[in-house]
Length: 123
Image (cartoon, rainbow, N blue to C red; front, top):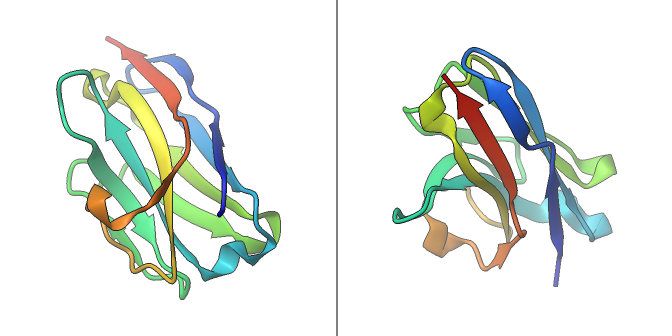
């Protein structure tokens, strides 16, 4: 079973940028559909961006044009470049994976999750 480790979170001011990383434990990372989710206390996890094993991507409307998803399979890594951050982007960011998964933004689709990395955006 693949394990996922997120990093790159932190505290930034509104308008700033962060790059989140998610590293998988398996060499066969390329066969996984992977995604980023965000959760704030009291709310359900929100799907932000997903990519399947053919490179097809899906983005949530809330981050379209500001966040960019990429994967480097030889590094078993998934990245989320976040620009023009807003206070509403504050939350815990999680990486999720599913073998041969499609680029979907529903949390129930993913059986494997990392522990998350916190992003805080101040106004």
